[in-house]
View 1: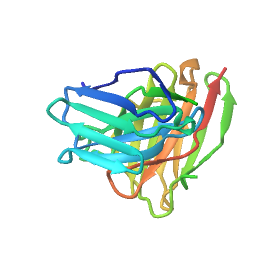
View 2 (view 1 turned 60 degrees about the vertical axis):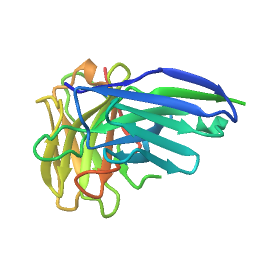
View 3 (view 1 turned 135 degrees about the vertical axis):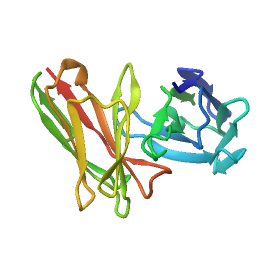
View 4 (view 1 turned 45 degrees about the vertical axis):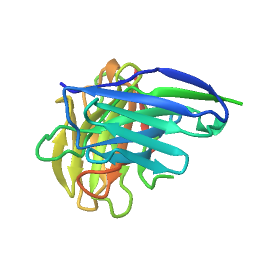
Length: 116
Length: 112
């Protein structure tokens, strides 16, 4: 079955530095990969989507890479701020259950803490 | 605010009981998804509906069922509740069958 690993449960960095989060997956070739942010007790918030034929995607201070050979995605937050502190979830498009790949398979997340 | 609404926000009930969780998707979204989040399991996909029809199913227990109505709102029914069903239940919606999903605030279910 598909397996997703987000390498660190927690990541602590200093304000202004670049945070790099890793997502690895096995036994699977997803059509796309997404990153979400989740604050305690709240629903995940969509950040970025990258397709299997794309290498890199950017949005403001966020950058995602997708290496289908390594089966890995890297998520970067540049010039990090304390407000970026949250849990970041990697999600892969699901297997083709009943003709749809809409469902997402989530990693367990990396809790990022940005210290001032 | 994602535009997805869920009710109730909190639910406390006893083992063996049945509850219904409700979700209204963002305006214009045709897909609704249900996820369960517990501390040890993370976010787990339960089921997806698209324009009223079931389109994908995850590891949803037989005690759980869902439906999507003509106005596109969805309900998740949980019956014969067990202590282990205590979790956050999220609804999400997307415009089409695939793509980015917008999550509601969740319903926190506590089974005592």
